Length: 500
Picture 1 (cartoon, helix red, strand yellow):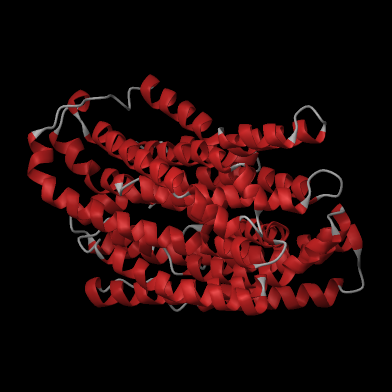
Picture 2 (picture 1 turned 120 degrees about the horizontal axis):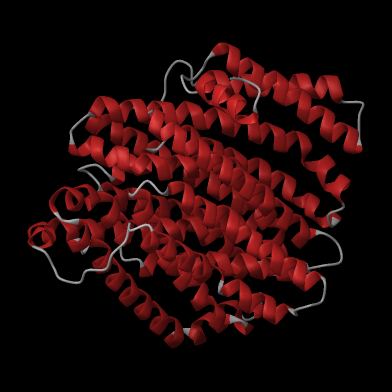
């Protein structure tokens, strides 16, 4: 676990710096006098649609790289390993088909979104460079993870990409570029970081191109095709479920892009809660794949339970901080007052993220297991729950209904997967200590409110944050709820120069 802990710690540090820059970007998007709400909504609609393109055009190739990498590594010389080259050709073919369907289906998109989100139609063609960049980066990212380069991928995706967006925002705010130029440059952003990652892998000798099909691929052909077909449909279904909230808001609600802007603020805040998961996922996939290959269920169970308690500790603390600070924060930093409407959405989406984090790495465990086909069936179940609940709750309750649909869907989805792993492999994420971070979060929140209630503005924002972190983090440390807490803290102290 120490290797996973080290990589996930470094990745999480990079991700949190990236998220800090991301929050700065959100602040600049939502501050008075720079962007209209409709423009921020369009930016987020672009991301939602491009993610869908990536899910469909990838054709399961990242999962193919993750699942079969140990086999190619064991049986093929490094310079005669065709795995990445094969995955690249298939993904590019998939994207070409998606682009063709997008061109043929433009009239349908105009009919569906032309009334409530007309700007999405205006810049429709620029969705495709963004989708291509995401597709290529996902492929390169999976390859880099398997070469223990998760820190580099997170540096590019979580930090460099956000700094690039910051530069575009500042250029637009200063009047150096107009909004069409902003969208054009934004649409090229993932192609840019994918190029950087490609150059890094080539220059370090971790990537070579080889286009001859080996006997190993021929022998594994049936397993590879089965995996890719199931994972493709599973990931496409899952991604549709995850971005359907943005799509349904854009389609159903009047002033759709303005509504999406408020919802997107809540999404961005809630996404910060999941930052540790992103670092942990990238570091854990190679050890999980190896543990399944060597049939070490005890090692998988250890990773499963530690990922659950570690993520739950972080998620509970961050959600409590957001609930404490959001309303004072909106007023203190001078965001448009209409963004106060995001508070209940943050509360609901944050709870959904907490549940997703607290259930551990069930997705990665299933994907690397012998029962990876369940990824498709659980994704279909998620979609069956998400589509009707999102549609009806959004139509009846607006963006709060959309958030509630996400909470219902994510809770059901994780419950199904917990039961599956328990029934099939006797793997379970929870221990007797699982409830303790939740109780500590509630108690620390209540105590902080009691102590700092008379304060307001920046004084309240700073004082209640410091007080809450001291109480909550101190309690977690002294109770030793996870074997990783003290090693992580000691590592942080050493890096900061507070300990030898």
